[in-house]
Length: 84
Image (cartoon, rainbow, N blue to C red):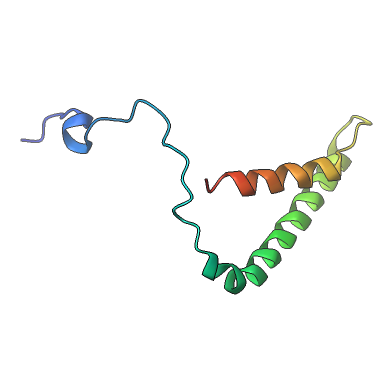
């Protein structure tokens, strides 16, 4: 039968709340191995973000410019919190 089926019967019930934060992904043995790659990605992402903001500042018709310090801090905080 190809008729419509409720999603709950196919995938189970949807959660009614956010998952509990967990640090189960954290492995202290990988810090040394992944640190150089993580720093390189962070620097490249910061440079790309700042260059994009400079281009956007040049295209905008307002005199207000972006705050690079605020942008980098926000990006860093988001990258630290998002895996949790």
